[in-house]
Length: 114
Length: 111
Image 1 (cartoon, each protein chain N blue to C red):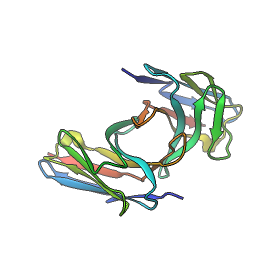
Image 2 (cartoon, each protein chain N blue to C red; image 1 turned 60 degrees about the vertical axis):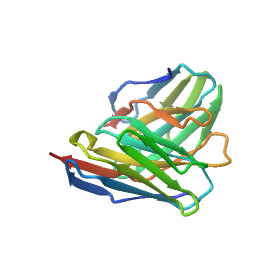
Image 3 (cartoon, helix red, strand yellow; image 1 turned 90 degrees about the vertical axis):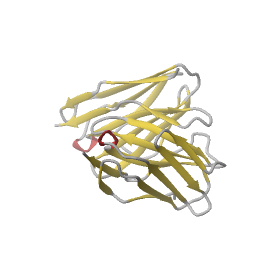
Image 4 (cartoon, helix red, strand yellow; image 1 turned 120 degrees about the vertical axis):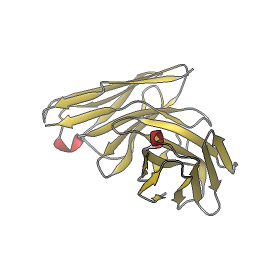
């Protein structure tokens, strides 16, 4: 059974800092990995999608890497801003299934203070 | 472009009442559709998924059911709600290699 762990559970940083969120998964047979952002009381917004054959993806100040063999992914946020405050979720899609079940981590609650 | 609509945004229902949550997708065809529940402190749990019209699979036994009457419509239902059905319900779709897209969610409180 796939298990996804995110570290740290919560993070509070001053504005402008570069930061790293970590995600690990137990079964390396994944189809892809996706990072989401969730604001309080809202749905999930997709940030980055990394296919199993890729090593990293970048979007603006965000960079996500994937090391499938070691079961790890990191989300790097450069020059953090108060607007980045949210819960960040990592999810892996199981390989070999027709419907691509997502398994989520518990999330990292990020607070960026001015 | 593809969009996903989910309603209502919030719902307060008494124990024992029925439930119907609706989700529709626009701009794609034959998507995989999903219902997830997010309970406080328990993360996101897959409830149902569908790979086609009338094809529903359940991940966990529960008081809920799902239906897919049309290609881009997914409905979550219950005949009699329990207190434990409270939570944040999220609909999502995926197709091919493009990852998941989630709706805005429904906050259900059973009182």
